[in-house]
Image (cartoon, rainbow, N blue to C red; front, top):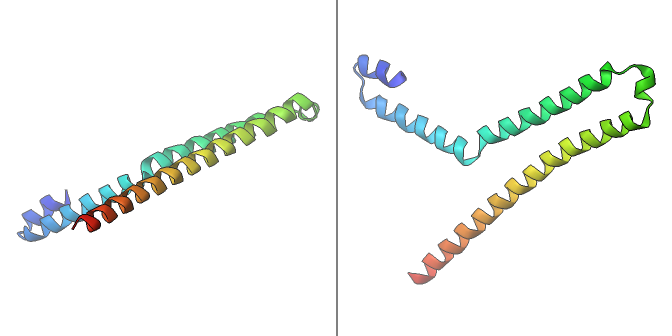
Length: 112
């Protein structure tokens, strides 16, 4: 949309700059998997909020029931552990990708 305005104003050369900046920003966000991280965080927050609503809805007697306490603790731990595992998985993939690129660069340098 900005490109259309720029072309309309008669400075078409800047439309290419806007396009490059937009493409670069999109590529960077995709490279960092920002969208999937935000979705994952939102799901974790929603789950924790739902758990908190459930806990707050219990009366004092129900909060003292061992089964409800276990459910609260275990569910919370599962949510947090899932998020931690997702972080570890992402970090492992990033490390593996960087290692593969370094090996490929080394092979390319050695072949030259």
